[in-house]
Length: 133
Image (tube, rainbow, N blue to C red):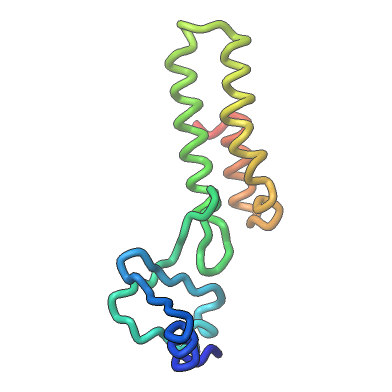
C-alpha cells in the first residue's frame, strides 16, 4: 500500500502539485482489493471506472467490455456511413474505405482482443463480419 504522507512529501520535495481539475483516479483490481486501498485526501479528484488512453478504453477490472462497445460503435458508425454513400461511389472505393478505416479499428486493437470474454469476442466478430444488424 502506498503511504499518502510519503507521496505528499515526495511531491513537495520535487515541487509537484496535483491539478484536481485535470486529474482522475482509476483503481485497477477486484472490488475487495480496491476497498483496502488508501484513498488520496484530495476530495475534489474524481474516481472513475474507465479511461481512454491511446485509443484503448481501460476499465478498473480489465474486462475491456467498454472498449469493445467503443470499437463496435465506431465501426458500426463507419459501416452505416459507407452504406449510405454506396450508391454514389463504386465498389473498389468502398472496399478501400473499409480496409483503411474499419479494418484498422480491429487491427490496432487486436492486442487487447486476445483476453476478451467469449461474449465480447462474438460481439466483435459480428461487427467485423457485418452481421451485427
